[in-house]
Length: 492
Image (cartoon, rainbow, N blue to C red; front, side):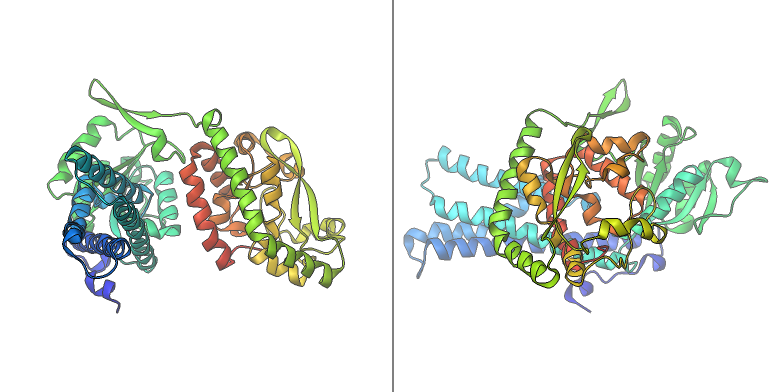
């Protein structure tokens, strides 16, 4: 058992005795551990800055900096508390936890600058500009590693919230399947409440996706205590109107049960959503995605600068791969293919050749072996792939020449998968929305399973990206791409 395991050694969800016993135990201990990491990160950063800026034995002029270094972790902890960086709802998922750490770093740096200016205190700028940014960075790394540890434990069923789902059968079933596939969210649905017609009578059902039905909507509050739930998830349904929802909140508030409500929105993330109160009615305001204007220009500049830097840094690898392909297969190094880009415009995509020269001619005879649904053609053990090509595909090295497409403006570093014209010909309905932005060298599809994804899941991820694009999301996807590539999973 690791040190972290011992610190968080509480009962597993199935063993909890009360509604919130297990959840409150492990979340409280988790937050205490996060505080220790926060203090340690800033203490280490302050010590490094002190030693670099003032090398040697501390003397009288450096004493104030020694005192400030000792006080810095406490100031950092207070700033994080001010930024609400320890809220339980931010534990384990989403970028909000990291966003609040960054905000705290900015606030503390600005506060030190303002106070020193107001009091006319001479401050060694080298010390401040080293200690605070380094401390913020170390804290982000520590929080990230703690989160990844929590995700691994949740895949094994530990440190989960016990959730009662309230809603219609189809919506509840979708939520159960989603949370089982993505257990790192930390929500385990252990009970269901359905509309009266399905909870009792001739059409009653006993379970949904293996989860027992505990009654109808009116019995939700009593079902919470029956199964020891610490959260109630209410899915969009007309029966649970504002009055019924408020009554449910009153009934469960005495036990400090978390109440979450899922609106009837698909794949719309936080920055586009805000609450607008109108005469006591909380209206959900949804911003339109920003696909043009200054943000589009910024994305284009970021893409081309990043692609040029990538080509320069990776040029030795690109040259080595080109020589390897030429020596082992004698055919052309690059594979050129027509793909469909933004607004339906066609362009030529560049990739390292991973198949035999006559691969396209042999595609027709292999159509019967297609293992993918929808408009895609994929075979896990494609006989057309060369030995070196199989390795290139596994680690996505074959995609690197597409950096040229990014520099030319045909593609973006991050975006939907670039489709073939014959795939676009099979599009229908919402799928065309994938084409309102440039296709990407990587994307949500790349970091979520690659070729192992179904057609519907691939489309859903691409549409989610289109509707929620931001530079922060691009950076997050690029960070996760390294992990997906090194694992080599889902690539064939």
